[in-house]
Image (cartoon, rainbow, N blue to C red; front, side, top):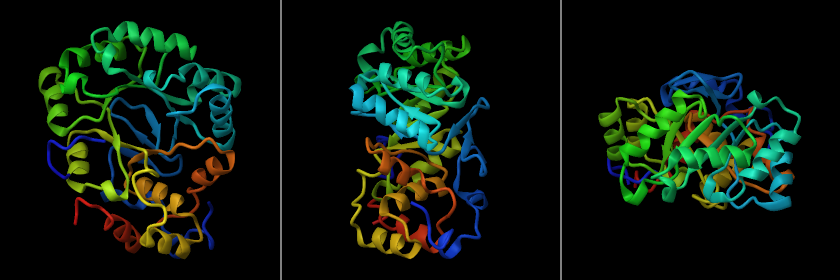
Length: 296
């Protein structure tokens, strides 16, 4: 980890914890893009705003998946992450529609399956049909096709962005070298690189490489990438009167890394979302950063 070729994988009490007077927006040196601290959003390269906290939907399918997504929207989530490969775009689309929320209030991401890399335009049409939407807010290449950067596929994602079927486009699980190949061949950097991320995977060098190229870093599987019973996380959680899951989610937000934890439980969804009226201090951020195997 930490090398250029690396594969990019609730309420506080007292309020705000020991450093509750420090709003998240004051951590200006840590982040990516432009951050609206009140709205909890990052501005992507073309001006659209991505919520820093979203719902990951891998394995949320059928009636139970639909209900979990509806619950998330009722709790307050405004960012839903799906993929062709998850087999639940229809459930996501129905949940967003049935929520009664205006389409423009919900940021929806889907992803191009590697096997569709040779036919991305048709694949996006199929995704939009399943979602019942005219556009997605973000469309990602899910994995490097056959382990390659695939600039020819990237060009077609840019075409979809230009005709507004995808408001922004990016990649997932790409190395910095692969991102650089896309930039070199097209002159356009992905808006987002979505990778597996969490305290044990924290890699400041890779994060800086994303920032330097104008990419927003987005972390998936944040709660599966670290032990929730880690003594450091448990001590920080005890200090703030929150759960260790909340500590991990807030840690992402302080670093301005978009985070998309998954849960099918309304109670857990609400807990995971309860990270907006408190913030971690420098001491606690350093402690959580120290769990990184890349820094060992």
